[in-house]
Amino acid sequence: MSDQEVSNKQVALKNYVTGLPKESDVQIITTNTIELRVPEGTKDAVLVKNLYLSCDPYMRERMSASDGGFSSFELGKPLTGYGVAKILDSTHPNYKKGDLAWGFTGWEEYSLIVSPRILIKIEHTDVPLSYYTGILGMPGMTAYAGFYEICTPKKGEYVYISAASGAVGQIVGQFAKLSGCYVVGSAGSKEKVDLLKNKFGFDEAFNYKEEPDLTAALKRYFPEGIDIYFENVGGKMLDAVLANMRILGRIAVCGMISQYNLEKHEGVHNLTLIVWKQIRMQGFLAASYYHLYPKFLEMALPYIKQGKIVYVEDKAEGLESGPTSLVSLFTGLNVGKKLLVVARE
Image 1 (spheres, rainbow, N blue to C red):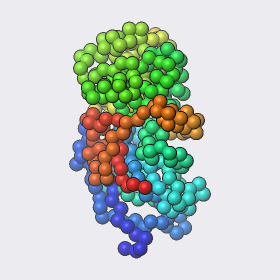
Image 2 (cartoon, rainbow, N blue to C red):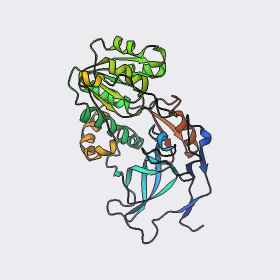
Image 3 (cartoon, helix red, strand yellow):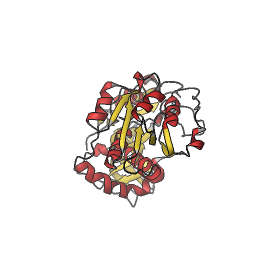
Image 4 (cartoon, one colour):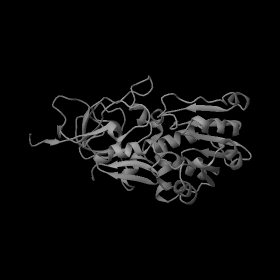
């Protein structure tokens, strides 16, 4: 091993997953090494030290053999996803040694990234760096794009958010309150429901597991109907929402976590209501809106610094926690934004 070569612990997919992922589907690899510099002759590349890695529900899709949606993870190779990293070496004109950035990286201690697709330099370090895996990273942009760009909220409108205590939902709810809307969220435990009402300032919240009839539950919380639905769940929840939407309502489809672990996806039965109620329903990906990131920061940073928006993180220490942390997303054990602390800066 040369002076510049170090061991490089990695988290990799062991086998493709059907049904609910298990910790044994993911493995820790400790045998690899890496040179702490960009290989000679490699252009537009950065060698980074990963500090924080983001655990995100969409990663479940990539753990299955590809069906034409997301591209699958490569077996035995490090998982990839969003993270915060420090640049140790660079042949890329946009990055220099010592820069901090957030974007797409590997689930490993160090990553060589050639021609980075998504790697955004961090200019503001007066907020926790880990926030760039969450409120100031992809989840924040997801909340911003879905709520403001797709749902175009108006003061006084009725907003419902499913999976509301997660990385994205908690931000959408606070954006909605700051926009003067009436906001209700659902989550899967008493602890999360309390968080929504007491910490994030939702007007109301309920535990969907305690509601045998979701359509009736939503009617109870929205006697006038729902103007905006931020969709994170799909399935039966979407059916219940469609029955409660108001005319000209908007639905931003961010995810459908209830469907990710099913071998056969559930059908949705109330789709004709989209016609009669003139509902606009749109799926979207945060990456299509990254050109708005400077505009988003202008809005979000002051709110964070003034304490008008709060953010709850669920941190796990070390790459060794990767398998447990990833699986916890689908069993409802995480509270807030799940992330791995790989190294301190």
